[in-house]
Image (cartoon, rainbow, N blue to C red):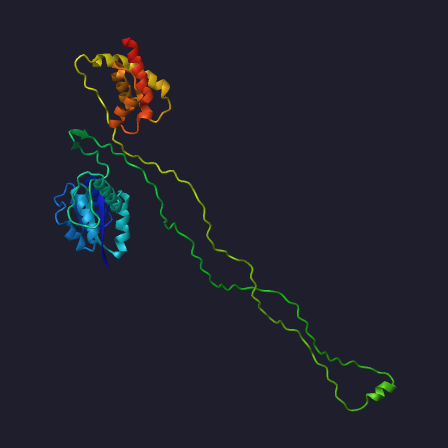
Length: 344
């Protein structure tokens, strides 16, 4: 039975690597097709092409949406015998999980970011995962979304192999020794010359004497006995595996624009080395760098022109850096106190 193996990849270089591996594995060039990327075969009527090759319409719509968003699709026609090999080649190059990506597109659509789909489908697609954000105007203000990826680790059951036990009956030659007893009748004539006795006269008549020979012979009996057991079972163990990956987050650097009478960047540069030293001594062992904390020092420095009001400082900071005030407030306060001391 003919099958079509389909995979969507982030960029054309991955897709081209898949095509090379397929050709090396012996798949016919005429059975391999690319859509999107550096090829002329873009999205087009990709839904019709895929559905005609057995791909469900909902999945075909998602694949077309992925190609429209700049990804590259590879499909190969093969038979049952070679389908598993083709799938293994695709998986070596990290194809996009289309169900997961579709879920991300739907979440992006729900958050208010403009989205378009190539066709109507019960599984709509929207902005692709990993986008840096979009800008929209609200009541004369400009909102800059801060996008952060979350790592979700699940598990699935896979077959790792097993044991197949075959039983067979073998014959082997054996030998045992047994001692057998045999009787033999011996007839001996002896010459005698003596007077007749009374006993001799009693036997002096006709008659028959019989003497029977007896012998032992080997008797073989076989009895089956259980001499060993082979027990086949399964033992389940648990192990902890550490999954390491990277997630992305949009960092927004805030730079105050100096107005008339404001302090110049030259003043700020004079403090920069001091702030760097403070970071190294006060934030040693943290999970971020001075370059990430530097906007907080600069923010505190710009507040030195007025009285310190933490509630107001937090509110203004959180407008542009939500959820990070507690992490950087000590840096902002240090910069404020340092600049304020020099002004007094």
